[in-house]
Length: 119
Image: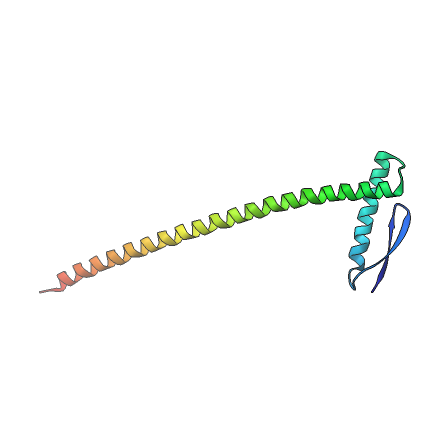
């Protein structure tokens, strides 16, 4: 199992991860470090535990907002799919009606042609 060093707020942490996840874990660590540094700039020097807790809560809030937006997008996609299905059904129905009309017209033309062909 690979080990990855992550630097957060000037402190190194060694973490284990699955094979192939090293780069992703480093990116997550860098993101957490940026958020911690932003908080340090806002609230000043507080204990490391409190700072990490605050960063975790800020990130959890961002995730909550993202999940809410995702849910809204999923609902909108479902509505659009339903509208598309209804439109396709309507188009199919229109095509069916047009085909029936053409068949009826063709039958009438054939009947007229048959009458004209009689001696």
